[in-house]
Image (tube, rainbow, N blue to C red):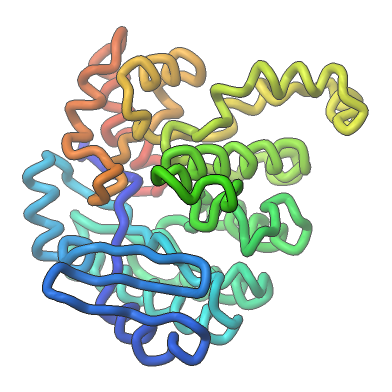
Amino acid sequence: MPTIDIHAHWYPEEWLRLLEKDGPKEGAKLERSAKGYTVRTERITNAFDDEFVSLDLRLQGMRRQGVDMHALSLTTPMVYWASAGLGLALSQAYNDAASAAHLHHPEKFVGLAMLPMQDPGLALSELERCAGLPGMRGVYVATNVNGIELDEKRFWNVYAKAEELGWAVYLHPVDTIGRERTTRYYLKNLLGNPYDTGVAAASLVFGGVLDAFPKLEINLPHAGGAFPWMIGRLDQGTKVRPELKHMREMSRLPSDYLRRFSYDTIGHDDRINTGLVRLVGADRVLLGSDYCFDMGLTDPVATVSRIEGLSDAERSQIKGGTAAKLLRL
C-alpha cells in the first residue's frame, strides 16, 4: 500500500504567473526574492519557498519523508479574494497544472480541484470540467467563503455534484474566525485555523448538509480542528438549546456525525492523534503533513507510527489505505 499524504500544498508556477499578471488590478501582488515568494491580497499574506513550487524539490522531500504520493492542494490565499472571473481563471490554472503534474508523475501526484466558490455557478461548471481532467480526485474548499458559512444553500449544487462524482471535499482554513483578536503571537494560525474548522464542521452538521448528501465525504484538516474535541459541548447544546430544536426532532446528536468526517494526523501531539483514533476509528484518519510549512510535520510517517494501540492493518489504513479509497485510486 503506498503511503499517501492527503494534506500537501502546492503553488504551480502557472498559477503564480497569472496572479502576478492580473492580481494587482484586484489588490493582490506576488513578490519574488532570493528567499522565495510572498503573496499579498488586501486581507491575506502568505510566504513560501521554492519547495512549494518545484516538483523536483517536492519529489526529493517526499523521498526524505518516506511518502509515495501527494494529493496536491492550493492553500492561502486560494482564489475567493478575487472577482469571479479572475477566481475562475486562477482555479483553472491550478487545476490544469495539477492534472499535468499527475500526467508527468502518475504514481506520485493527484490533484484536489480548486473552485471559485464566490460564484457557485462558476464553481459548479469548473467542477464538471475537472471531472474530465486526468488525475483530479477531489475538491478543495476553504472553511468559509469570504465569511459565508458552508451550509448556505448557494453551495449545495457543488456538494451534489461532488457526491455524484464520488469526490470527497477537503476543507482548509484561509481567512479565519477571530481575526481581530488573533493578530499577535501567530494566533490566527495556532488557534484561528482549528476554530474555523470547528465552525465549518458544526455548520455542515447543524445546517443539514450531511443529511442532504448522505454519501458525501468531507475531510477535516489539523486532526479535525476544534470539532472532535468540542463534541460533548455540541451534544449538550443540541439537547437543551432552542436554536437546535430541529436536531432534537431528528433524534440526532453531533456525535452521531463524527464518522461522517475523515481527519488528518496533524494533531502535533501523540496524545491527540491517539485520542482521535479512539474517538472516530483508525479507518477515518488519514496521514497528512501540511507540506511543507513550518507548522506541518517533518516526519508524518513517524507520527503515525507513534499512535498507540494500532494493529498493522490499522496503521496501513492511516498511511494510505483510506486515502486510496477516498481518492478512488
